[in-house]
Each structure stands twice: as C-alpha cells, then as structure tokens.
Amino acid sequence: MLMKPPLLLVIAASSVTMLSLYNLYRFWFDIDNHHKRNQNRIKNLHPKYPFRSYAENLIKNKKAWAFQGRALGTFNTLILLAVDCLLIYAFIFGQ
Picture 1 (spheres, helix red, strand yellow):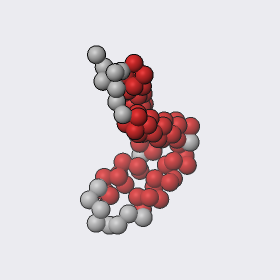
Picture 2 (tube, rainbow, N blue to C red):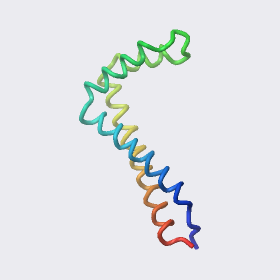
Picture 3 (tube, rainbow, N blue to C red):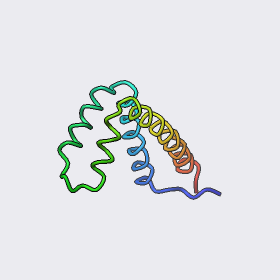
C-alpha cells in the first residue's frame, strides 16, 4: 500500500531534477562557457572562503573537472529521475 505524497513534494522534487538536467546539459554541451563562468565565480570569492583553494586547483585542470562534473552529474541526474518516477507513481496510484 503506497502513501500518496503531497503535491508540493512532487513539484519540488521535479524542480530539483530539472535544475540537475540543466546543469548536466551545460557540462555536456556548453562546457567552455560553463568553465569560464565557474572560473570567474571562484576568482570573485572572498579570500577567506574555506574551499577556495580546493576549487581553484580543481578547475585548473579543465579536462579532469569536466570528466568529474559529467560523471557525477549523470549519476546524480539518473538517481533524481528514478526518485521522480517513484514519487509520481506514488502520487498517481497512492491512497
């Protein structure tokens, strides 16, 4: 017996999935602009930001940064799509 989740939860989960799909699109098809935007964001961070040096070192190697972003983004999006499917199924067929 499935419990019917609230509609707001289904909408919120779907919104997060759409945001993840957009980010995944940028990693796969708009990598140059995405890389430049992230470099500029990191440069504009306050120097006392605790992970700034880690982020700078990570983004310096564009090829490794792109591979990591694509791999983790694809995995994350697949998980979110599965959760969305389960939530929508429970919303439609739940009691």
